[in-house]
Length: 427
Ligand SMILES: Cc1cc2nc3c(=O)[nH]c(=O)nc-3n(C[C@H](O)[C@H](O)[C@H](O)COP(=O)(O)OP(=O)(O)OC[C@H]3O[C@@H](n4cnc5c(N)ncnc54)[C@H](O)[C@@H]3O)c2cc1C
Image (spheres, rainbow, N blue to C red):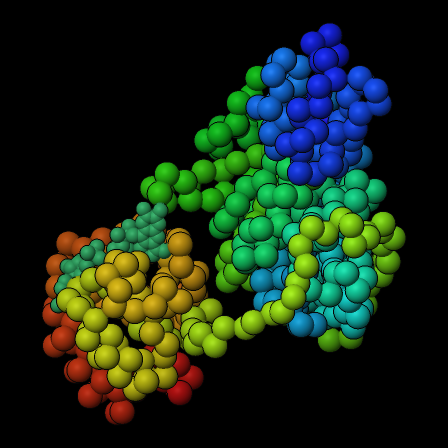
């Protein structure tokens, strides 16, 4: 436990209990103790008039060798697995096999009446499924999911836990990490496992302090790479002293494995002690917004427009262009920030990560934060009137000209265009 009472200074005044919203402080007469509900939020430290509460950090030694296997939070909504869950099962499978022949990847399925989803998890690469079912878990709540995951991790001790960087994953993973007193790297774009000693490995990393690390430590370490400093450099982060190692990964970044129809695996039903009292929120009604879904992630062709469009009406041309060639409209953040198009169209570090067969970047300069979301596209075509624009450094084909001249020409040519490589793309 990171929060500790300093008995020599504590007067038993109970000021800490009044501010603790987690009911994590008990009193027996004048004796105050911290219980397992503590999240180390620190409110009690601030409230204590006698400096009698301290955060002693996660100083306890963790037996790294007790932790095994890779877990993937298999996020489902209304009984359907999210694509990112399947992508992460594929990535977890790859990591597990790299760690050792004995290491397995497990999907963590949480909900009510969702056992039928286990088969899909196996078919996409899971060796097994940890299944946690209860009526209280039917709809996502932070408290409910956090509790059952934390309890399961404490019992089964996975070495790595991966979450999709969805709204739910971004809400859940930090809570789980804080409760387990371990690290979390958010929004990873690349994962790898250590095969060298930490000391050798430190040469590859930007954030690792090698002091007190044992170079002969045989355990594996997860290299978690993500953009840092506004996307201007890629940082590789490790979690050398605590377990599990936890990451969130954006949808669309990792590859799904090819589906192996009929694959089976081990099903482990997890016992849990979740009660209604553990959940502080009550879902009264679920209102789904009627907002248009922009299918950027699955698009084979994306026509993205940036500030170079000049104003919002430029997106009319982009829509016409996209409709003509069977694509979906994307945008740079500058265009979104200008209010020319909805954020759901944004591609990049703070938008959607995409990998279509063809990505048209029209009037987009090629800032690193934009590239972070589209660089994996098969073919990048850049149209920019500045021949020095950085987008040309990543483009397979570059047209240094005015987009308002070039796009109508491409549309005019499209109908008789065998020029574009591949009939399947054109179709
Ligand atoms: C933390 C952080 C996160 C970010 N996340 C994202 C993100 O997710 N996605 C993103 O896109 N950006 C993101 N950004 C913003 C990013 O840094 C850039 O500011 C943005 O991508 C620039 O958009 P742009 O290329 O459309 O505009 P500009 O950089 O202004 O480029 C406009 C380009 O259009 C060209 N042009 C002008 N007129 C024409 C014409 N008629 N024909 C052809 N070309 C023309 C110009 O030569 C220029 O190269 C982020 C920034 C930060 C700090």
